[in-house]
Image (cartoon, rainbow, N blue to C red; front, top):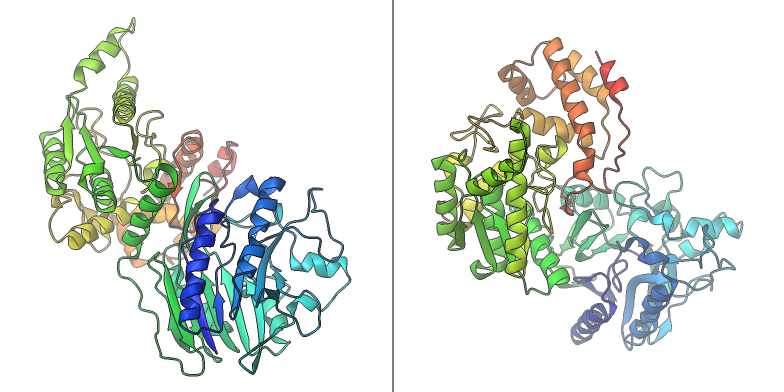
Length: 603
């Protein structure tokens, strides 16, 4: 049997465009004499659609495309994912009283739904395990296959039995599942094990799985472990969002033989691919991991966001301070859109050093982008003159930042452009940013990256471009895990200002507290007491004089309190490109409730 893996780019909310892509891939598959073509989960309208799933009229419109896809199935089997709002086994209402909605895999051949072994649920499979953690909130919208089972007192779901697919005189028993059903280790119901009890010849999993750092490797390990029969995993390429988080789907579709040997793989670099696999005569094509995955992800995020939101027609405005964050963003924007669509502004005050002003000029020159340099000192003085008293240092610092935000917003409107936010994750975590100053923008590409990740990516950017675009004086030299800067990071809002973060250690601490996401402070304290921290962290604690318990606890309390007190700023940040297992926004769902009482008792 020849299987065509259709790793397509899914544009959320654009079913007509997605249908055109599906039709193009189906035609190519027919030309290649494929027997079946497999598309990803929710490939018609997108997976992460938030409360658009509560708009019944829109759902009816999405569901109408199922008939259109089915009509493409002459002489080829088509498997695809979309919503189903038809009554299933008498279930017509969801738990909120709205019409029942199901995340469904469809299977059609010759314009008919493919029959099952048992004669029930022909052509459809409903996702059995609804993820409700991190960025997922499936049970808010969808009823699951488990709920269909319970409603019918069906202890061994008929929907888990294989489809009987016959083509060219050959019959194959094919089982379908959707994304989370394969990741069933932490669920009491083992969806994949139950499916395999039906003795399928082939297991096909369709997914729309968002990427985070190193997920491609974990995904391959899991699939290899689960592959008791030939297993095909098809993932989408897409940029989707849930409001505050921009999610990236990287592709990385794979085929494993029974026993876990990888026999075919599509790219995981956020690119469409049409992969034809002859299961009778597979040509080994094991996955080659990208060495520039984070770079690929951010470029894809910017380009897809620009395409979706602005149709590629706006200028991108950036405040180019001469620091590493804005230098990296300017490089990413120029790489993504070309020099003519990027406009940089350097807006110094009397506190900005010759070094950073010079850096801004060098960066713009290396990228060949336009740079406008204007001093904001007259505006600072004019603003201070409006007060009837001398303003504090803190007020003046924020005047600087807000004037820059005001000017960039005005320049952007004048240029019919949008602003790129330059904040990094550690600054956002600790509130080291000014509302309506450096918190503005249409998108935050670096908002889920720590300073150390930005440092790494800056080196990679220079390597990719083959020249020094980001000045070496901004990039830390790492020795035994300790970052050493020629020009230490600074906001330059007052004389001799140095950022308060303990670079390297606070980057690690933030990731430790927010990964997947849970703070798990008690385990952190236990690891410290029992000397179970990584060697590079121990070196950082010594470097920052935190290698005694009193200093360690005091710094931890400061960090946690500052983190909690900065929520009101984070909630007003632009959408953040999510690359970690604990991104601010809907991934890490915060509250303004303070837990200072709990923090104070730590010892």
